[in-house]
Length: 135
Image (spheres, helix red, strand yellow):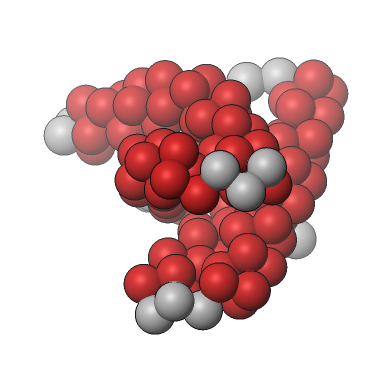
C-alpha cells in the first residue's frame, strides 16, 4: 500500500469515527461519544504527521485529469485545503472546551466543528481518489 493510500485510509477512519461520535452524542451516549472523538483526533493527528512527512519527501502530485474533472477536482481541493487550515484550531478548541467541562460552549462550537471536520475528512478521501484513481 502506498503512503497516499494509507493517508486516505486514515482520513476515512477519521470520517467514520466522526460520524459514529455524532451518532453517539445524539443518543446521549457521552462516554462513547468522547472515545470516538478522541480517537478521531488521534487518527487525524497521525494522518497530519504522515501527510506532511510524505509530501516533504515526495513533493506535490499534479492532477492529470482533463475535461469537467479539472474544475470538480480543483473545487474540492480548494475547499478541502481552506477548511483543513481552519479545522485544526477549531477541533483543538472544541476538545479543550469538552476537557474543561464547559459543556454549553463545547456544544455551541461543536455544531460548527463537527460538519466541517467531517467535510475535510471525506473530501481528503475524494481528493486522493481523483488524484490517483481517475483515468
